[in-house]
Image 1: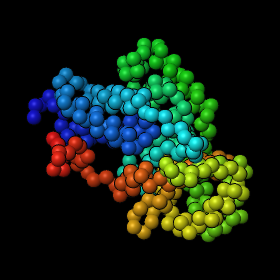
Image 2 (image 1 turned 180 degrees about the vertical axis):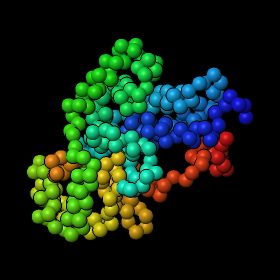
Image 3 (image 1 turned 45 degrees about the horizontal axis):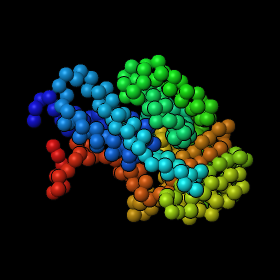
Length: 311
């Protein structure tokens, strides 16, 4: 291999960051992994001769791939779109080695709510906001990716920033969120309707996304939400606290290791104002992998017909 070619070890060291960038641009873990894979193929083929900042250069490559995917993505806004929940990053609550994607979300006002708002932005707005505001990529570099002038790119990010500020609510601090989510878990496992009701804001909203072809639903109001939670106390016994997009949430793992659901909470004023529940078996596969912890060393690179990793 030429010394100018990108090595698997170099790429692997940057994979968590690149996956985080792609995930934020695309809002989908599967699409993010595809974008990172495509970036590996392109970067390895192009070589790295003359590249001084490998991380920055690969970020640009991944962002271009992700932007193309975002622009070509077919419209999926079906009748159940109101109940759509973005892909959720899950990691053990007290794991100091939790995925950097999850740690990156901790700095945001609300991880899941932010992803919902990002879905409403144009592809160029989303890329400008994510790269500049979340990953500190200079506007000059972002401009080259979205094919705009630096001034126009600043305007894109500014518009996106206003939309996020207007739509994403502030939450209680992490300690308070954990306290409330823990109390919700205890009340759910006990089937305690009154305790659940006391934890819920009167106008709480719950979105349940079970995937294509399944009965997804949108619930509003504390009494309906509490009744739903109490009705599912049988599965609640399999639930445990976890980090969901960098914030205290719940993950339900069955005895065979299957991730049944992931719950992301929005907590304000000591009460739950929103719950996003993802129960789509296919989209929960990455969550199961994250909970098992990814192995160290190079992995998930292109494989040949015999299943051998390349290069």
